[in-house]
Length: 266
Image (cartoon, rainbow, N blue to C red; front, side, top):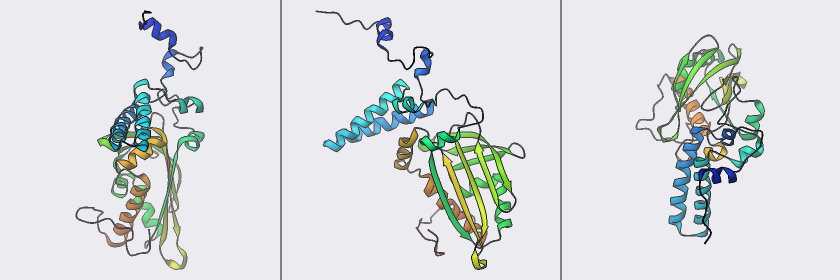
């Protein structure tokens, strides 16, 4: 009987490589946060899929197994094909525009608020107010005139942090920002304040682009865990509207979440 050689040297001899000129450690192209989420999601999908005892269930279990491999190995074949490496960030300025196009998520929400643009702009421009508007934010701390530090609540009680800078500021009209290098979640966004027709107040439009930890599958897992950024931004704008129009502080305690607040906004 032939003896199977499983020595470390033998394993190195068969280990897949991307490029002979590339350092061995660069084969890991998935960040620690992504690996953790992939592992948890993979285990959940595998258990759920097996429990279904059906062909769709087996497919889910197989997907779960691939996520567990992604977590254990730190390697993603899709990232390899796209030339993406979240384990070894190099750009101190944050994600490049093409990265948002390749693997980013685009969120757009708008509400009409019965207040003047300058009132709404002034409240939003004080960045420390943002956690009262967007519930997924735990805190925003101003560093200087342009830079700030953000802490967000992730799924499974995780915390994501990043530094951001304001890249465009037009008083009473527009605020735009982007995350800087080494962010846990690369993101960029803007909020515009436009007078509504016939003196109906101001249309507040929020646009956010972000690269979810774990890629697009990470977004699906976040939704399964109850974290949907589009819904959270929509609810935040609804709370912002209520607060600016009535002075009522946003709260969800004892209040059911509906799909309409009586103003016709969805």
